[in-house]
Length: 483
Image (cartoon, rainbow, N blue to C red; front, side):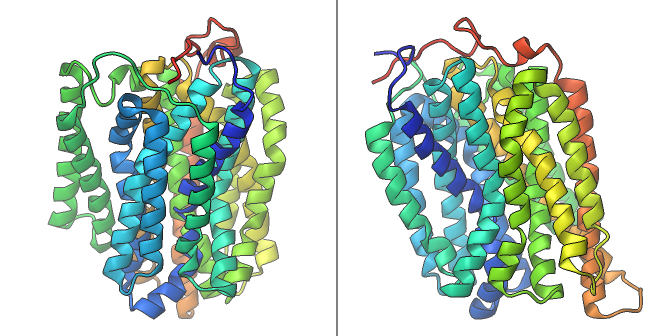
């Protein structure tokens, strides 16, 4: 049987795959609201507190390329199920952690299995909806869920921390995993790349160590950009990534075929995704801190206070989907980041004695409008024209861009926050100093979104029909065998 004969279960499969994407994205932020409580209970230092977030994003992002190839070669459904099961076990371990080390290890293990789960899910979506209007709809749903996931994590984290315990921010994943396993077994069809497939282990090693060194170097920037350790790890990471590119040019079956990222449209989409990740994972952490530490909100109100962004993404997604069909993706990818940048710039005007309804909520609404315009076309653009053999690798690159962008963004924002607070001489209270640090992070995030708009304008070019192929002859639409 071939995917060219659409399965009647494909829309239920979309539900399962979208739920998977929701889980792996929201887990990047669900602990944010819980961190103050977890830090107090486990006696975490500020550095350990940051690594509870970074360990997940780093392991996730650094291993995604290998996870994508495992999905392609070993079987996407099989990889999906193994990743789902491992993610559940790691979440349970984190939920019963007794100290900071155990919690950070659990978060890292979550990232490892998410690196199998996420590219398998997106590759399965790609081969289940190979072309046409259904593909656009499926990717719009998937992209919207992915975009809302970070904000949903903040809300869900607030609910669980307020009414249960911070540990349930990890334990709740077990329920998602059970649903995902059942749905995956009965609704998803197996597919994999055909031919003599070999793993590029040297490429996997260099890119994993390179990305890890790069993120760790940025995390050390909190203690100073000129420190020898900071410079050393950043240089090591950059060197390993250059070596990775050299390896990929020479091996017969590369971990990341360079044709995936050298295509201007896809390359631009990956860069925009990285900047979006820095905003969703990095700067939104400081929204959570401002709501709880400065404005004094309890976990549940703080989680609910982030809801306007999520709701606006959901409200605007259908509008953006119609615009996508009418005007194509390029205008959305240029204007969306600018709208989000405006919201972040407004958010940087927060004060310690300010009102949530005046200073924070309007900004989150504007950011949500901009993000919806990005998310709807982004997933589709990043996979436009990708051959079925490369579906897992391309899916992994997209997810890796989000997570690595988030890891680097969080590290950079943390360094900016720390230096701003340390140099604060405004004569106010400690909360005023904290607020100035948060504002610096939001300004940096706004600048990043302006850069994303420029990248989209430069790289994402072509007619609507070129960027969003509709017919059966679309480049990405050849049927894959289903086992």
